[in-house]
Amino acid sequence: MTIFALSSGPGVSGVAVIRVSGPETKKVLEKMSREGLPTPRMASLRKINKINTNELIDEGIIIWFPGPDSYTGEDMAEFHVHGSRAVIDAMHNEISKVKNCRIAEPGEFTRIAFQNEKINLLKAESIADLISSETEIQRQQAIKIMSGKSSEKFNGWREKLLKILSNVEAKIDFP
Image (cartoon, one colour):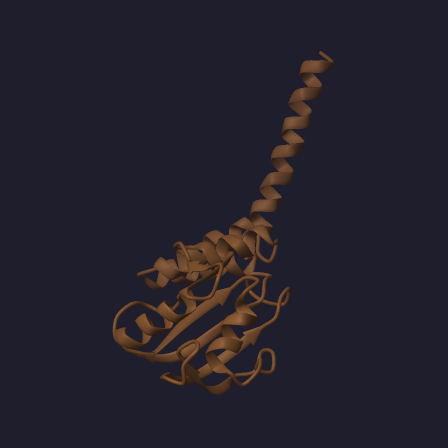
């Protein structure tokens, strides 16, 4: 199944980012931009049309991330379009017309990245923490965890606990 969602915050803005991930991503790009696939990981200014018509939705930036070298590990694309409600709704409506495409659930892109072993559980949690951070201290803590600094400490604790556990089990087995 291919998923899509508004990745930038809701509400009117100068730019909205709509992310698409899954096996039908190429088809979405081809049907909506009609100019062939953009160069991978390069921003391309494209006209974005409604499917099967020449009606222009917007002109925006498309970035193509072929799998497995993407955030989710699947084929993925981002549409950077103007952030009006009408443009976002038109984009969602057209993408949903492609077979096997559906709106993503909250956190689903990160869950897929975790399932495809692109990120570990600590990084997945730290991404959620960073997105919801409201203070500078919360942001700094999320960044520490995301960068792996806390992982070293946690792994050290894990090693100590395993050693203690093995000693306890040895005492029980061999009194």
